[in-house]
Image (tube, rainbow, N blue to C red; front, side, top):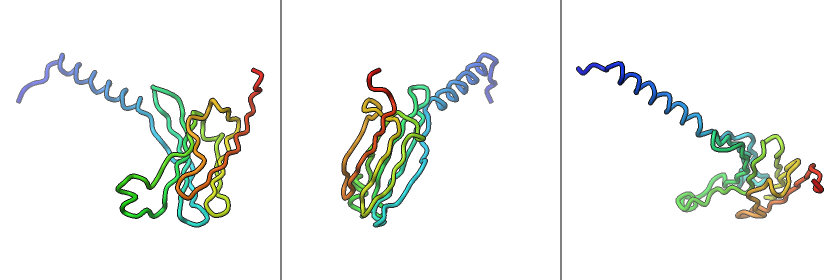
Length: 138
């Protein structure tokens, strides 16, 4: 059996440290809240992601069919992201209204903060309450 030299052990330790640092830079995504629509057909999720060393926080609201058929799943059309921003989740909330209407509230949002905003998806209509608290004259 070959013996590992001191020089090789230093290189292995350096490689292990690099792998650890790179893994911590990848970030993670967490589901903060989820609700099923009144009809039970759709589910909405508020997700927050830490993009790690390459960026800041990102929040998104994603909607999905609760029980999609086989063809919908195979085509990848059972879910979609409808709202995205580089703000923390504490400023964003959502509620289902009558039938399949989703209302998204973003406290302190400015138009520049929002990267994605859709007004409808499949059978869902979406409305927004974007209450800017920043002074627009600045």
